[in-house]
Image (cartoon, rainbow over all chains, first blue to last red; front, side, top):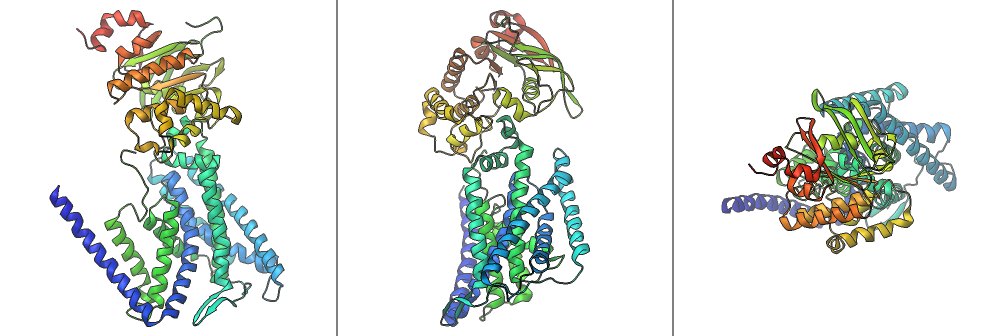
Amino acid sequence: MLPRLRGARVTDLIGLTLLGLLLIWLAVNFVKGPAAFIDISLIGLTNGTIYGVVALGYTLVYGILQLINFAHGDVFALSGLVASTVIVSVLGLDEGSSALVIIGGLAVTLVVIMVGFSLFNASIERVAYRPLRNAPRLAPLITAVGMSFVVENISLALYGVNYRTVPNLISHSDVIHIGGITYSWSKASVLIIVIPLLVVLSWFVRSTKQGKAMRAVAQDTEASAMMGIDVDHTIAVTFLIAGALAGAAGIVYLMQFNMRFDTGFELGLIAFTAAVLGGIGNLSGAVLGALCIGFIQAFNEGLGWFAPGSDWTRSMVFGILILVLVFRPEGILGEQTPEGA
Amino acid sequence: MSTADGPVLELSEIHTYYGSIHALKGVSLRVGAGEIVTLIGANGAGKSTTLRSINGLNHPREGRIVFQGDDITNTPPHLIVKNGIAQSPEGRRLFPRMSVTENLEMGAFQRTDRENFKGDMDRVFELFPRLFERKAQKAGTMSGGEQQMCAIGRALMARPKLLLLDEPSMGLAPIFVERIFEIVIEINRQGTPVLLVEQNALMALEIANRGYVLETGKVVLEGSAAELKVNDQVRKTYLGEG
């Protein structure tokens, strides 16, 4: 009893020391350049939000099937590429279009891509995962790796190896400009699109009958079937939602960065890491984990005082993941599982 | 006993497998309107497999299951619930991170008559006042006895035409066991036939009309509860006498 207690205190102490050093590092950087610090935080917030939308797709599917859907990142990348076609070739939007046309065009793109990719994602489940429902756990995992390559190669076949981009549709003029701090409409558009989606998702999962069925299946699949829940249908709905989120993420990513066929690999890895960091299966955890990674990345690459720089970003992200998992294997928020359940 | 309309549920010679394991080797049984029928037997005799065959989680490879005249042998689980068979599973299997109220709602998942929903929940709370006190609590944080009440209440929310109870007394303090069995009698008196799987054979035979004894996937004995209670073999094996 006592040694255990003391052991726990030692690890806690190490954890708190590391956390303390991190806070001191952030504080010193803040004092040295408050405006730059806030600017960099806003970049972290923007990127973290995008990671969060992708991470939600991983965590939703994992929560219900205990399956790491490796194809999710590639679905995200393909959705962004298709969105670039819709925006540039189909709708023909460019910088010169009027604000109303741009907003309307983006809204149409958002709806088309979200609906299209929710169906695409659900078809992947129907074809590649459902037939393996009662197979050993490794079989669907390998299929997921396979689907990841298939989707990535679809992107490659359709779009080649070049990066795709869209014109700067959303003005880079500032929403806020105080002192040296700037926050552009372009960055704000990420939150403007994502926050309503998160509100709707949270309402759906918390309050609708289908959302409750998703939570029930995630907590006990067999008992859900015994209560009259159609498990296959519920899993299909989960993939529809995850696909819609991938589509939305594809569009907001495209508005900020260039994309090509393999963008989904790197971003999928980051998003999956975010989901694990926050507590896999936990929706708020995925967003929190993604924001953490967004901030880590931005601070590491942007801060002036003793920041390791972008060469170290991946090491930093995964180093912090390892530390968090050593101290809290269930992730920051965990799965909130009561004992015995 | 079973009426002229025929039994509510009838299993004829069902064979159920887990992979290559032949778990049920030709089980036949029936539950008549208004009856409490109990299925007793040792661990691994096939009691839970019989329930899993009825509720659609493990479809039998051979034989037939007929519920209220419909063949449900290969019907998927959610439609079996819709047909009117609800279950309180072994080990309760509540949704641990949902509140008591949400668990009860899940029991009514297949129902479309929202207007009766509130009244049914009140009826469950009337049967189990303890659940009313804990309705906002996460189900996984309750005691075993409270969880069992919630599991039975959840099954009742389906307004079942047949209630399957799998080991409702398992792991409960004697005072809870008695309370649970009183409530099973009460539910039955209100018109719901019950198929009760129990290791506590004494208690089960006390409240049942009829019983079946399972051994290694076969029915080895059947009869009225009164007959089984005085049967030498049953007394020796399941009632701890002899």
